[in-house]
Image (cartoon, rainbow, N blue to C red; front, side):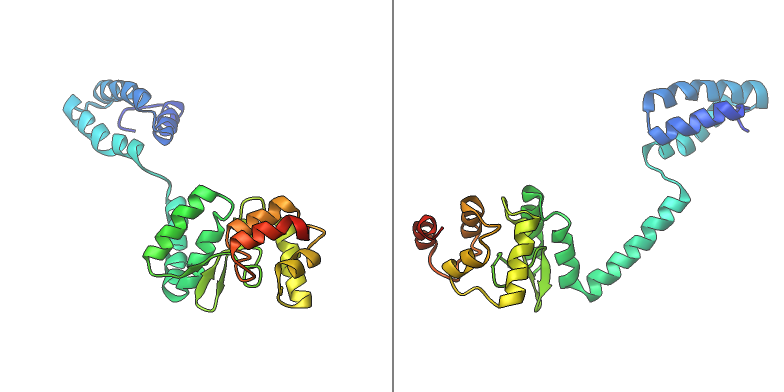
Length: 210
């Protein structure tokens, strides 16, 4: 209305503000100031001030009201969960990046700094995904490189059916349909089989048992 823009011209300005392309917004600024004076009688300094104080800042950072309302609602929900269910909240946070090794490492460091205990994978304690167990965060099988969903589910299902694994031999025998040398070595390297023997012994006996 101020610059006497047509509907298409006004929508074009809206579009470029949304895309945050400063070069285009600067070009439209010249037209805005000229038309404001020619068609509506505004002084150049007035049009310039309106454009610089109202339109250009919107191009730096803005989004629509419904978007803002959704973010506010999600922020309220997550703040409630973080305050009342902190261990579960942080476990879910780690789960969201559990298959991205670099991100997971950073998230674990951050969670530890906030005072939460993060336990390493364990064939008798871990589940497929990162989980909250007895007040601490237990890393899951999917956070281990070379361990996929089929292997993770098989380890968990065997444990649920026949109880805890008693030894490396017992573990390999019960999971023989999904575990190979590569995945077994991955489990040893990430401490998931430490309860059975020192790692050098596990590595030394692995090929023979397989």
